[in-house]
Image 1 (cartoon, one colour):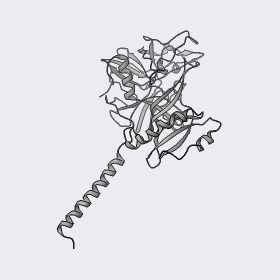
Image 2 (cartoon, rainbow, N blue to C red; image 1 turned 45 degrees about the vertical axis):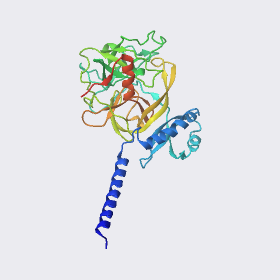
Image 3 (cartoon, rainbow, N blue to C red; image 1 turned 90 degrees about the horizontal axis):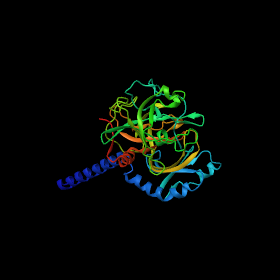
Image 4 (cartoon, helix red, strand yellow; image 1 turned 30 degrees about the horizontal axis):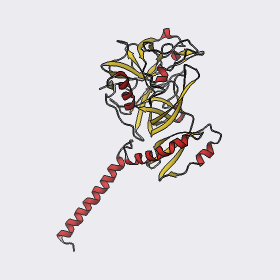
Length: 371
């Protein structure tokens, strides 16, 4: 028979066990962001092996993902088009320094600017809107045509610096014409930015409307973001920064987490949803020097966000510049700026890094326009 003292001790032990179980449950429920201990452990291994992997033809990049049990693992992206793709996959060990390794076969990563077409859910993302326009819509540089083609992308969202509002998109959507080559023009500060893009008006800018003026910030090739901005023309863009199919945002931003539900509105695929599949990605993207031009440079990005993109249903050509936000019904927070991908993955710059870059360029604090 237990004494009252023994009973009390058993009671305390039971409380300790319960507390441990609850703590374990809370720990397992902690979002897998890049500050999570198990994610940091994979990043430590990733930092050591990525340079060697990416020096081997056929390996396209790495990221921190998760296995079927939700445990963080090292993901290695393998080029589907490489002659020895099967050998490259087989050569990867199941573990590196105690961290699980998973191969993901994919196409080469590419910047997702312009191709004819459009999508959506009853909303036109390619039609000319009545001003003031909403964002998440077709748009681009007014003279983005060369070599027999015209190009464009997505006017993604609205940001503010020093009280001035700017449309946020990608460098390769608004600024990428850096040679006189096919059109005897260069993208410069003060140039018109239009809605919709040339690719949606048969390459005739007269059928579009000027909604902003380019402010060159030259994010590439030297920074780690693919970003560009254009100062809003008074009365042409909704001052609350509303995005088609999404509405107004929160002025706050959110960090990315593995398996986090996200959505975006873009010129080609419209309003789409997916989940974040990787963090801290290192990937390389090749950029052209003008619309349908030659190779300008190949940029290796680090610390990127990876999103599941099976069949290109989340992000596709022409969706570049879209803002990725939390998949919440009202006032979602921005998570990343989408700019590249493949038929199975999409890539975004962390929005905090984009805003930091813009603030440094414009001499102020850059924020999302929202509630």
